[in-house]
Image 1 (spheres, each protein chain N blue to C red):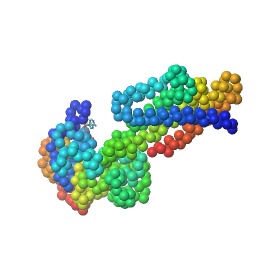
Image 2: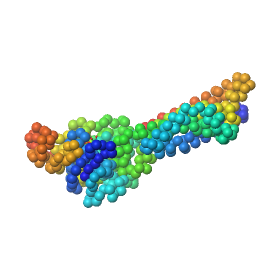
Image 3: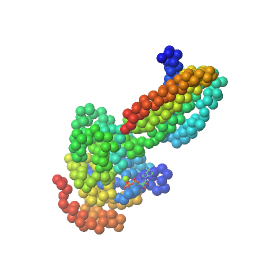
Image 4: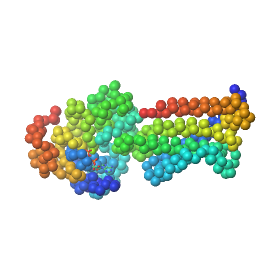
Length: 250
Length: 197
Ligand SMILES: Nc1ncnc2c1ncn2[C@@H]1O[C@H](COP(=O)(O)OP(=O)(O)OP(=O)(O)O)[C@@H](O)[C@H]1O
Ligand SMILES: [Mg+2]
């Protein structure tokens, strides 16, 4: 599968042949501009492949109704993209509302999610996005994606603006959502430690290609080439040891 | 207040109001349809630029042989006057909505129509309102011109006052037009602040 943007001289994503199992926590890892976001956006049809096909549950996504497909896929956009004229609660409740949930059910779900992302519902429900810090806004973006309990969750660098302590707790929450609900997650990051911590399977990308995929331990122990070796870094050994310490509650 | 004065205010408001409503009904859908289409958009903005430099008096004069005297040529001139700020501000407002916001809207599974009604237009509205406010003030002030071709309104006092060298009448006309324009400006300014995110 490949994607070439109009007017671009080289494809943003090229020759990608990748299968993500249902219930998997896949992490796309690679340097800036390597095509992670582009690849992610093909999954909910925000970008259409210019060559090849993308299948979900065995069916070509192009044959699915785009809006219906997207309502079933949570998407955390890299640029956060909260609706500035909506309150936090309206932002989080947007997909349930599109799906026609009753308001009481939406309200309850919004409060539940705000607690999950460590924002006090009483204080934050009625704020507008401009009254949030960058990290808070990013967490609301995560809550919005989780709202309708999608079976598939696409997360594009969802914790980039969050401080280390909150990030660790959000990583635990996402790992828990994945474990308890069996959500298939495709998660983009360029933070190697985050990738190692969360992934069942890491997909290493460079310059539009997938250069290696495998479980974290395999990537660390058998990097496919110098690029991957450099990426996981000289601390591969310390990282490998860290992997042996389980995630909290894992 | 004399019945004559009230009738003149009424005629002035009716003329300016109709011009504004017509310009809105034409300008907002046009700018909305053109916003994402480079060629129509370029043409429309060029047209808006052209309209801006044509003096209203010239339009009045040109329209006379076609539309005759009175209300209709005045209305045409005022619509042409009101269109540029409405076209330009609608365009700016729609295009200023951040790409990330639109992508997020698309990503949540809104239809194109829902993106328009729930996200794009509401976010553009405060900017559109600025254009409406500008247009309203210009139209109210310029509706005075209608008096020169028998279109009525408060301009009658100004034209009459000039012809008979009646200063109080002239001042009455000028002050009422200014008051009306300021009133519209304040009201629309309030509405615009209420719309702001
Ligand atoms: N809409 C677009 N039109 C044209 N080119 C694009 C577009 N979006 C991205 N690109 C290009 O495609 C390539 C891949 O971009 P992409 O956003 O997928 O990278 P990324 O891996 O997510 O990077 P980052 O880590 O910085 O977010 C880049 O070279 C980028 O400039
Ligand atoms: Mg990206």
